[in-house]
Length: 388
Image 1 (cartoon, rainbow, N blue to C red):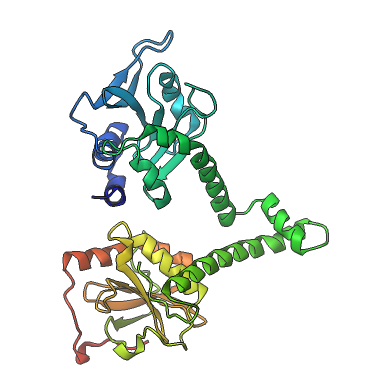
Image 2 (tube, rainbow, N blue to C red):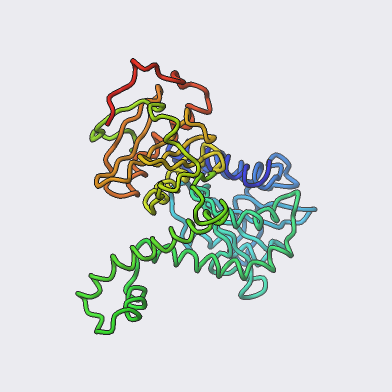
C-alpha cells in the first residue's frame, strides 16, 4: 500500500473509534502503535526498532521516560510522546521531548494525541528542539502535500538528511497555510483592515469594520472556489467543458420530500450540455461531501454530475450509487440524502456548511454501497415516491 492509502486507512479507524478511547494508554494501543507500524513501517514488537518507555538520564532528572523511541540501523532517530485522544496538543506537552532531544541522537521528535502528529527538529539551534513543529499532520483532515515528506521517515525510505533540509521550508509554509485558513474562517481586524484600505478610501471605523467583515469572508470564499473551478475546467479541456469531477448527523426532522434515487431520467444527466451552469455553491457542496466520505472510500471514486435540476454526487460515477444530491439552483436549497432503499429525502439547508450536520448519514450511505447492502437497484414504476 502507498503511504496515502495507509494514512487514509488509519484516519478511518480513528474516525470510527475515537469516541471509544478515554485514556492515554488506549490511545497508544489503538492509534499510535498502528501509526508506527502501518504508516511508518516499523516493527512495534521488535525492541531493536521500537523501544517503549524509553529511558535516558537528563541532567539531574533520572529515570524519566518517553513513550517510544524508534531506531533505524541501530540508532535512535525518532522520539514519540503521546497524549490522550481528544486532548488538544499544547507546548507544555513537549517538555519531555525537549529534554530528551539534547541527550540522544534523535533529530526528529513527534508529539501526538493519536490524531494530530507534530514533528519537531533543531532548525533554530543545533541539538536543541525547536519550539514550533516543522510539520503538522492532522489525520482528521489529511494534507496530502505532506505525505511525501512523511514517507522519508518510513523504515523503507528513511532519508533523514532530506527531511532536515526540507524542514525549514515546510515549517514556514505550514504556519502560513494555517494562518490563512484561520483568516478565511474568521478574519482578524488587521486582515479586514488590509483589504478594506485597498478598496475603501475613508476611515476604518467600527461601522465600516462590521460592514466589511462579511464581505472579506465572502470574497475569500469565492476566490478559492473560482481557483478550484478554473483548474477543474482546464483539466477537463477548457472553459466550456461540463463538470464531471473525480473525486449528530442523521436526517433532520425538517426533511420535506422523498423521491427514488433512479427517478431522474437518464437523458437529464449529460456530460456536455452547455445550458447547465455549475454554481460556486454546488462546487463547495461537492467538496464538502467528498471530504466527508473520503475516509470511507478513495476520493477519486467520488464523482459529480451536474444536471439541469440538481447537482449529483455519485460513487464510481454510477447513477445507481447516489451519495447525495444538491438542490441548490432554487431560492430554497435542499440536500438530498438516501436511505438503504435508495429513497431520497430532501433536507432544507441554509448554507453549504450545513451539509456537515449530516456527515454520518453520508458516510453510512457510502459504507452500504461498499458492503453491497442496499436492497434496491432499480425501483419499479409503482414504487416511486412523490416528486418534489
